[in-house]
Length: 94
Image (cartoon, rainbow, N blue to C red; front, side, top):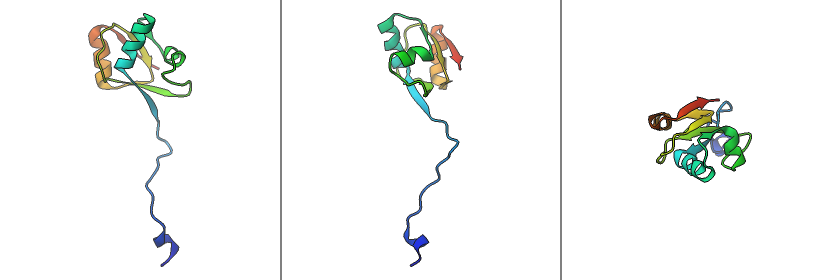
């Protein structure tokens, strides 16, 4: 049997894929409670070890948000954006 038929086939890997580091609303709430702040930026997330400098951040809507926060991140899910704005906070996309 020829070599190209003996070797298993592998899937496609997109070289243009953009990978985001997920951060949930629960993480933002615990960070706001711990530091007593109302503005969470990318630098705040880096300083507290939730993401690294090279990561792109996507805020996901998992969890409960009770504090009015001003959040800056690279991307937001629809549920996270709605939850932040419902409480009276603002969303800023980098």
